Image (cartoon, rainbow, N blue to C red; front, side, top):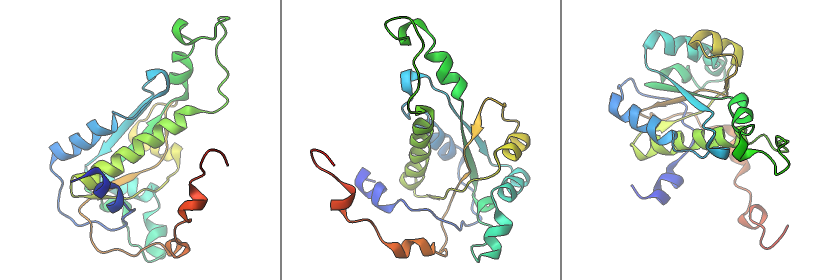
Length: 195
């Protein structure tokens, strides 16, 4: 599939069929996600990939399956054939930027005016979403209680699980009513040569 087609076809899907996804496809999606940028090549992003049905159901509950069902979306989070839980560690970034080649010229450690670990994990998420589409699959995204995700999946305290990305074979689903807002006009989104 051409990259432009992948981008245009990407959307948040909230219903998945029961068919499994081949392990090699799941591994390929994870491998592509690892190609996300990271400040100073810190590589503070990690993925937990959940395929066990019982664990998927528990993670789906943490991701709000019951609440989604009450809203008419169904228990879609735990339905994904694989659940990707992207995590990021601020500590990994701070440790990397305390190394000699990343210190300020005066030897001090940089002050992070923007916490770029959040940008980098966002890139990881987008690569998962796009890789799923490229594989002929679909994906969604939801949050979840970070402490409960840590406990359920054994995620170390210095890594923040930022949400859950179910991946699987798409079924027709209920679209978010937020989509009625429409896209911001391109002239509003894109500014040229200044604001």
